[in-house]
Length: 176
Ligand code: 2AM
Image (cartoon, rainbow, N blue to C red; front, top):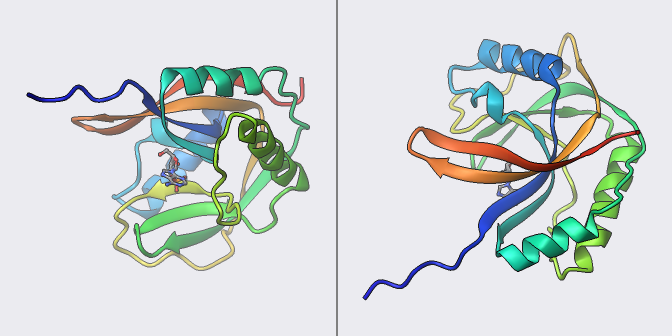
């Protein structure tokens, strides 16, 4: 007898780009490598929540109720590679204090729902490519991408035949 898998979905919180920023990120990724991720998948992870049963998801949503992040702008000017997963990423050489504070606040709120924070220090990055076979171009990027934070999204990561897709489930505006 096969056992049904427990219900739940793979979730994360991310800064979601608007159309213009997404287009800029996608243009850069396409220019850098044919192994770029689909434009629709571009985002900046804030907190990875992992596999989440429905009751836990409801708790997370309640804990994030009334979130009012302070506005900030990312200057994405630095390319790098995570060697193990062969990820090519774009990030800020200076992480805005408001972004660090936001990730801290999210972690505090989620800890109340027994979320276990990632023990690694937060590294703000946008994944531009996976299974990247090249060498990251030299730092700094000639023309940084400016990203005024506008929207935080609770997203689901779905594995599909064509590859992984990220589906926004809920969002919170920044600075309203
Ligand atoms: P990435 O930010 O390096 O691309 C959805 O899977 C998002 O959550 C992706 O952005 C992904 O990595 C990030 N992610 C996936 N697994 C993770 C993990 N175990 N720890 C932290 N972030 C993870």
